Image (cartoon, rainbow, N blue to C red; front, side, top):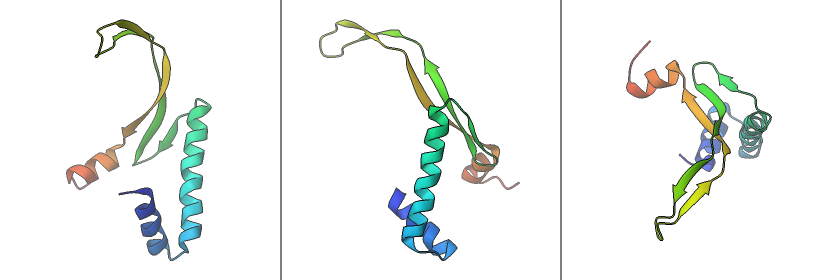
Amino acid sequence: MTKTELIDKVAAESKMAKTEASKVINSVFDNISKALKDGERVILVGFGTFVVSERKERKGRNPKTGEETVVPAAKIPKFRAGKGLKDMVSGVEG
């Protein structure tokens, strides 16, 4: 599902205009992104948790040349599915 398809579904199910649904979806994504940027966790009970993980600096290798290089440390976003989402996807009823 694309973002546009999600907006269409939200608009249809909530009986709101697509422009309003688009504002809501964009606001949700923006607020999740801002919270992660500020180092916060975003916990959506029954759905999952968004967290920022720190990846240490490590040695890497250029696959073309074989030359060794240093991959810098980085902060990366991660998502951990919650029990409700896992159960829904696996078909387990709870």
